[in-house]
Length: 361
Ligand SMILES: NC(=O)c1ccc[n+]([C@@H]2O[C@H](COP(=O)([O-])OP(=O)(O)OC[C@H]3O[C@@H](n4cnc5c(N)ncnc54)[C@H](OP(=O)(O)O)[C@@H]3O)[C@@H](O)[C@H]2O)c1
Image (cartoon, rainbow, N blue to C red):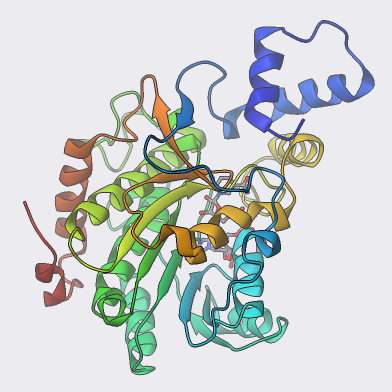
């Protein structure tokens, strides 16, 4: 069984009555990794109305979903290209002919990653918690003086002790605000593309472990209530709502914005966590998660598939648009609009005048 959430749900709901060695391992690791995972009960997903099912699912790899897609002449930016899902996303999009600009927190990491894949790549330095670095990266990309066809906001962090960046909780700053700024700084380039795409790598944690009230507008530093899992869910909800509001603002343009959950994949995402949690996550993702090749499939599909050229404001899992049903803020347009305003306020010193070009309420 590939779907981690289903395993955990079955494990939690006690559907499995016989306990084989494999099940025992799955159950134990699920318990160890529980803080990283969405809750066992609560919202679930159904296919989104009006968007045809694709030919792909949770077993598809990034190479399979991009087979026969020629990305020659396209420029794609992938943040966090030196590890996990971002590395595979860069590798496969470059394999299909795109010129991939891959970012790493240090130039050394970005160069090493870019040099290790076939095809045309350009390394760039980007530290998302540092808005000067985000601005400098956007300037370097703009210096290439060409349209940007796709911007994959992939880089992300999970956990650690509570830390603040410019007064807000660090995961919110890195996973959401840094990308919010980068996208706004590069929108002008995306408008120049024949069909620009923003792809935001969110997570099921956005509806599985975000605060019940959604974005904590009155406590973005999370001083009232902090746990690594809650802060991660909060930042991933911000990813999904950012994409939703961006899509609304981009209506009538050739640029689209979509968010996605890549699956549960054994990458370095939980490296800031305890040994126990890392072990649990590692075991569970090995037994029941996706491979990195499968984990990059939804990103590559949303970034490149011709069938999605006008699809915008959607959320994808396993290479298909899904709607979250039940108690969540995933499709909360009011929170999305408010988050945009708040994010503009928090990054205003760095925002370009071009942000005024996209439709405001
Ligand atoms: N793995 C999963 O099960 C899973 C599930 C749902 C969603 N996701 C999402 O998928 C995306 C990719 O994660 P992954 O699993 O591939 O994890 P990963 O292997 O840890 O890769 C994360 C990437 O983000 C970069 N990054 C971290 N903090 C950064 C910062 N402050 N500034 C710039 N870059 C930063 C990392 O750089 P360094 O290597 O230098 O730290 C690395 O390149 C993330 O957005 C994550 O939230 C993953």
